[in-house]
Structure formats: structure tokens, C-alpha cells
Image (cartoon, rainbow, N blue to C red):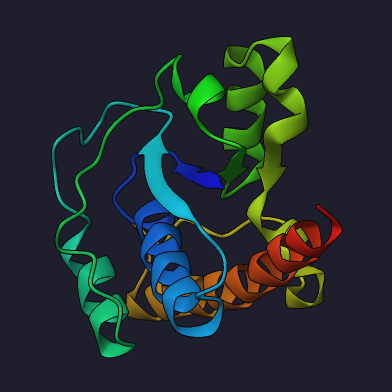
Length: 158
């Protein structure tokens, strides 16, 4: 199962989601074969590592994001990935405009996997204070566990 997480610039939310899911899958669902990547819908930060505040918040919870580098969603991603997960409704709209019709069924919103979390969108912490990065981690951890449960169900059904 190949999963791509997508946000706007690929330096806060989507690399966090990639790092969290990769770590939780290895720890809590080693039976699942999961490949994870992240990308942005805008090319603002291509080639850059995740925002330092993102890396610091993630490291405090045991997630290492240092190897990740920002990239933009490419046309081939719509074929390469089994699931493309947007952090918010605006990026989901952008993905729907760019994706070929056959890929639309593979586009999802991250917090669909954590309906108990409340909001529909993972808020962008870039312009906020340090608590925003912690809130993003809380939401992403909940959704990553929900996504792992979803993938386990799919695996059992297959």
C-alpha cells in the first residue's frame, strides 16, 4: 500500500503525517506493508527540509523528520499511490482538479480517519504559535491510528 500525504507547501502537515504513519505502522502494525511519502500542492519550499518547528515538535514525540525534503505533487503520483490523503479541504479540491478521473476514488481527507477529532481540516500551523504544531500532531496521531485500523480491515477483507 502506497500512501501520499499532501498539504500546501510540504514542510509542516504532510511531512508530519508521513513521519507519524511510518513510525506508528512499524511499531503498531508491522504486518502491513506500507510505503509513505508526502508532497505539496504549491512549489514554495521544494527541496527544503520540514519547518524547524515541525521537526522539533515531532522529535519531542519520537518522530524523526530530518530526512524528508519538500516536493510538489507530480502527475505520476496519481498513478503511483494507492491512497492520496489531503490535510484539508482546499488541498483536496486542488488534488481533484489535477487528478485524472480514475484517481478520484483514491483521494481522501486525513481527518476522515479520525471523525472523533472534531475538525475536518488539519490546520496549517505555519503562521501560528508553537501550540499549533502540537495540535497538528494530536490530530495526525489520531488519524494515523484510524488509517492503520482502516488498512488492517482492508487487508483482512482481501
